[in-house]
Image (cartoon, rainbow, N blue to C red; front, side, top):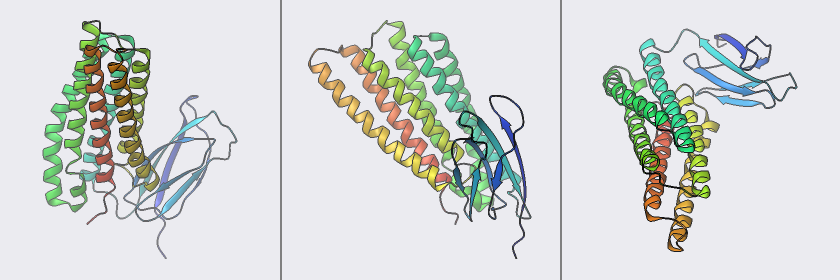
Length: 279
């Protein structure tokens, strides 16, 4: 009989900042897995590991309470500390990318140069951190086969940061030169940036656990976002021909769409690398 690994869990209300009880039902979990998920009490979520599946379900009957559950699974075959720490570093850069996009979104909506400056400073930090992280991951992969699938992840994070910097540069030009976007273009860009944040954080979560549902979500979301960008670009060209848009704003808008597509592609690649079968 397979020994049930020790499971330690802690549940905290994000809104009320106090402990809550929930019903936690699991199968045998891979002791190497580290799972960190956000649960909405109105739903049941399935989280898959490489070796089995675990179902987390609440019995509150409440629909407006969000709970964060951190599950640490421990056993004889615990994840090697080096691998775990490197994945944590990659995840940390993912959170910095999300913060950059939030700043960019606010700056774009409010025409704020302050948020853009902070965004680009964070991008510079990501670039600096990626150089050291890429070396460490590559060296670790030579010694540990578990790291091989993560070798290109730092590079994808770097490419995402570079495209965010391009978005910030174009947004700064829009603000400084007082270039006007139509209400439609503002709505479309804001929507795409928000979708990007969701894709990136989902891909980031996959660094810690293999979740087939979440992986499919990232892949499908990337495809849909690219399609949406193409549709927006086509519709924008038609408006430009009709004289409803200015060439100077058109150039910025199309470039931003390209950057958004690039970011989504790299996020999808991170998800694919993180969930690649171990060799």
